Image (cartoon, rainbow, N blue to C red; front, top):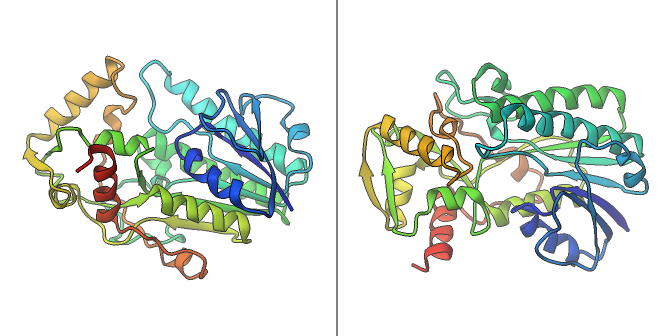
Length: 314
């Protein structure tokens, strides 16, 4: 029987992962850590209201076989200073992972991101897990934080050589529960793009496929990094058009300005840095497929289409 510690248990993604853990007869108990309780209740879930930066987590993790670390500031509301987001994403990650290792956990399953590779103009057409991480060489806080955490995990691995550390690197997550869906799937089914957007490839992974990837990594020992992305990258205008959206082209600066205004007004947590990437980040998922435990049910386009249908009823 397995006892699991899960940070970010009230997150959008945990809402999809928790039912899989609840239904698994091998999972005895889940210690869920967050600042707010999850919306759903589960018999196996013991909720602990705690900041991931707090001291004393080692004692909480005693007896846990696996730590699943999801807690992270992804899109940053304007009210959260960048320094605070960095403290949560960096110091918080280091604190929980160190505490779990010292408590005797056998395995860490850490949510990283393909953003750790960095969105740079000279990226190769297809990135694999051994491709250099260059997120620190960008101006995008999310890429910087994900890259920095992976460097820190390298050091933790040296300090605890028997510790199994699995790093899952998803792309943008679609699905009816995810913030990416809210940002990209508009109720009026209109997609605004730029000339640049018509030439930039993108990948999506459906929340169900990502939950499956986390689940198999919890159930099986898969040390190292794994890209978790949908097949069939395409441009966002093409994907939106396939979903039946009306695609309207406007100058890129107008898109950035509108996002900035909405962010500053507190209408969205997605700041302008999310729409100003320099290059594309397209990744291979062959390493995870080769384990024999995972294969995505949804392609990139299918993930968007299914999400649009779920959210708009069309």
